[in-house]
Amino acid sequence: LALAWGWKRFTLVLLLAFVGFMRMGELMSMRRCHVLLPGDLLSDKLVLFLKIVDPKTRRVVLRQHARIGDELTVRFATTLLADLPADAPLYPGSPAVFERRWDRVFSELGIPIKSEVGGVTPGCLRGSGATWFYIITDDIPRLAWKGRWFQQRTLEHCLQEVGGQVLLAQLPTE
Image 1 (cartoon, rainbow, N blue to C red):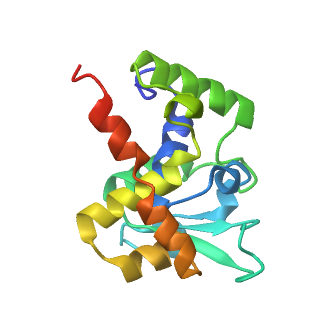
Image 2: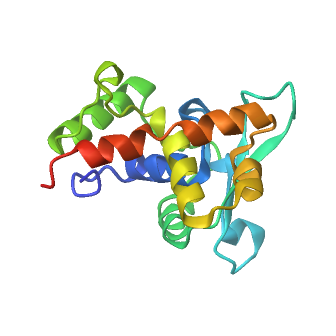
């Protein structure tokens, strides 16, 4: 729906957050220079890397990155970002604009957007992406690495957060 409305960079941020288990604050502060596309690495392998500017867990590991190997996401990111200047923001709008677009897309789809009623918020993308990855791979060590969960307890909490699946099951078919 966001693509149909022409919100390409919004859609890209959604994909990166979900597929890369990224926190929204991390993505909102990124610039083009923080995204290493296959062409930047002189590689034909469809993988991109996100250099995380100010990681939440910097006390544990100072420099962090996310690796995204989802072919569709890498191709889409390459199309949108390859020709941008290094200092261009990954998402050109403010966090408030992002949230308004989020609310509009999901409201249009009939999906609740208020956390008080079990709705979706941008913050659910990281955990939902991790849950999706767990369901399709059952690879907990890779999940922990990919999600940058350095403490077992944090990973356990994330895996138990299956609110997205519960919400999906509660939505009307249409």
